[in-house]
Image 1 (tube, helix red, strand yellow):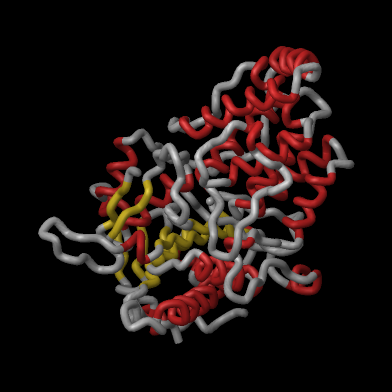
Image 2: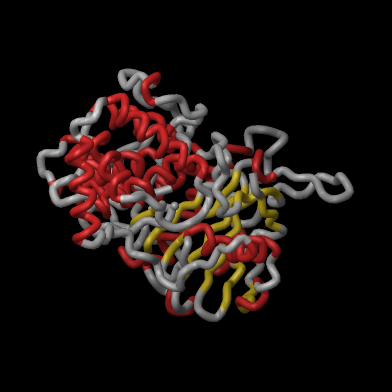
Amino acid sequence: MDTITLHHPRDALAVIPHLLGYYPRHHFVLFGGSPEIHRAVGPEGEELPQWFGSLESSQRPDVAVAGGETPLIRVDLRAGPISPYVARQITDAVAACRMFSCVAVVYCPSFVRFAHTREFASVLALLELLCAALSRLWDGDPGTRDAWSCDFFIADNEGFMDMGEETFCPWEELESTEAAAALVYKGSAPLEQEPSRNIVKASPTRMRNTAVALEEARGEEVTALEEHWDMLLARVVRRRQAGPPRITTREAGRALAGLTHIPIRDKILQVSLEHDPLLPMSSVDPAVGFATGVGERPNIVRALGMMALLDELARLAPEGVEVPYACSAYLAWWVGQNSMTALRAQEALEINPGSRLARMLKDAAEWNALPPWLLGPNGSGRCSRTKARSGGEGAADSGGLGDAATPCGSVDIEPKAVDQQPETMDRYGPGRQAA
């Protein structure tokens, strides 16, 4: 598995745009790693500080390793201050992912203007909760007491401020960062603006060809459709390059025919989330389903690859076919992307208001229900309507959108006022709990 070494917390600022795929402008981003990820040995065999360690590159491994993904949480601050409920969900996710070294970054057009906003006050309140959560998580163990860290930066168009050291640095100081250079060498090129996640339909000719292939495939045996999906799943696992997957209209039509069979659909979704090596679809029991407990992650890399394939199927699908949208929403929910869940579920319902899977997922997103692996020790996986309506609508995600239609902020893992006292800024150093 490819790794990239971060030599200082601020190196994360050079890496975050590559992980998101674009340069954030109005966001709070929380980057964190577990102690297993951040323990490392230097060139002479010496043990490096807790921050040093490995960060997965954007290159997708052949097989995802449970717990190997670096957590990244994003909050779209254009939706307003981070509500107390969303802040609690973020701290729960930190505990569930057992983050150890955290870097919190606010991206804004102007640091001076942002420092006098309610959004900044809500970020400070969130940082207080984060430090308290990290202290509860690690200070009970003598081996990790006072070793965890939570570094805070504010970045604008001119540079970034290290709030712990109270120093401002121009962006040029990150140009020689080893981590970013390695990602650029591998072909990573973040976009200047956040890309739209709406699905743009293919040309009428390609959609028509897909519709013909779909009708022809409806008469195929179930075993033949399962074998077709065996091939597509193997392609997803092997695929390493970025961008939408390549699929012909005939392949898309046969794939959609398989998805319309509920037992095949359930098998596909189950296998997309598992860490086990791929098995022939015919040997998968759809009655078992996919189940995981608190702290047990699904196969995020495989699920994201399948979501890309499903989105391409949705692009090629003829009018009236909602199943790839609903399936993409299901996988988005399992990997923790609630705003994507809401978007894809809504798209599915606009095509077929009777889709029970899409309706269930839209309700889950509106209630901000999280999958089991992202629930903290308190198990706060949903909010009440009262909390939803009284809280802010900031959206926390790993590359997600702020969704004004969602009653409470969406927490995606690609989201009160406090006194803005300057002297509190140096409390976010390693192993220090904010007062």
